[in-house]
Length: 397
Image (cartoon, rainbow, N blue to C red):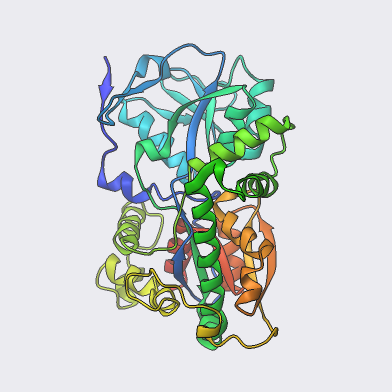
């Protein structure tokens, strides 16, 4: 029996917010501190791959985007995930359970007619699969690790998250609220420089290989991604290009309030956050909370128009001379989602706006970035949406 279903379910759609790494919902924030989301970083950017030696068809996608899954092919398989608290794990779990199959952790003596999973860091997945080809089927990972798996030739793609949910949200720029309140000029200048970097990078991606800066961008993606698996220059370039094509870089916040409100509702229903935390703090609905969590005033303030087409120049933002203000920015390891941050440093966009970026990290997980923000170790952080939502709710008490 085949199962044919479109990317479904408001509950699941709410939780498929790509995290750059595992989300640890039990982490406790620093007392008295809070954060605000001031920009998106990207949408999409993950995928499921399998051992290239496997000839079976796990799923098909028709011209209308309808996905047909084949449960008999999935039965008895073992997949790697970044861990049960990651969005990638949740995505694979819902796909498997949507076929009516069980999804259980692998271990000694574990046997199931469904699908088993084992936790592996994305950077270790390809090597682990190569060493265990007879037992491991494949995995789900974020970029660049998904693209690395394909580029090395040991794996083949069966599904990109963009095919599963087109335009799904992912990472955000968050700021420590005490810092934002006391340093509004620096925060807005930082954001303006970051937006200039995103736009510059997107222009190159739109032009493709014909752009004179294309080689620079590819090499920068390789450098930031730092794949642990050795590969030829040709494969590294293929990896970088594939990873960039699987990510949509954007700073616009439109629609994020509703999307994260759905995340809150899902977390409450699963018991992952205290369902009384929001009403006890005076928030009548999850949307009231996400409207509070997301602060679009910083984004609006760096443009001369409400359509966000005319970015203010450094002089329009009051930058005079060569002096700069240092901003401490927490970031994640080997994550090309945040490529525009590194490009902006490289190309001097932050310097143009009078900002000196001090990188804090790299951190292995989004929860670690959030902890650095809440502890005041970082002023700004690049992080997946789920840690921001969960730890911000925990911070309410």
